[in-house]
Image (tube, rainbow over all chains, first blue to last red; front, top):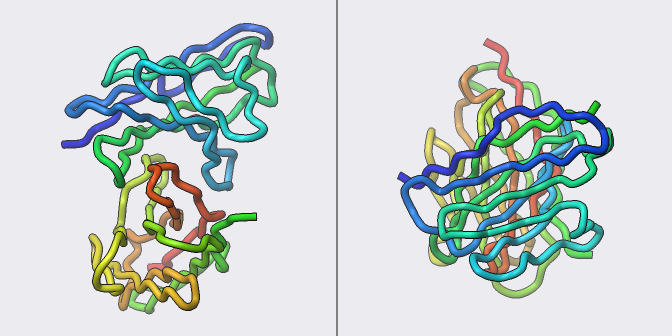
Length: 114
Length: 112
């Protein structure tokens, strides 16, 4: 149980285009999901908290107009990287929180912007 | 600033050696503590967690961690590592909101 999927697992896009990444909780409902960014050989940095039915809460320094988050249902959150640039290339990881304390992580999406 | 600090960035051990990875945090008050592992090419998996109670926590695959409140520490230990333990290890702290703050990570390389 407690499986979180992400789609796509790897995406390459051209600079200036937008990319949407999906995060799904497959066997549980999650009112809260989180989006992280991980640079190579570095730790995970929390980008935003996604709450079902309400606006996402962004961490300091994260551009909310660039990283659009939509939590349309209790099992789906999406992250759209708008007008992507090479510096947005990274590994994006989501997690879902079915309860109050323990969250489950997706496998991540590698974004490469050329 | 509030932070989570892992002291060892890259650890190389031989099989059967004992492991201890340090983790310190700078938050006051009640915290929930986690150790996650990321095997090469795989997603993060929870090794163990501490919410309350016995400060010595046992996790999967023979790992354990000890919460020492006075030292703001949550060190990860394993008596005898295996080659399959080669991975990236992350300590993380939550203050009850679900938001996790991660340490920098420690790369563990176990030589057969």
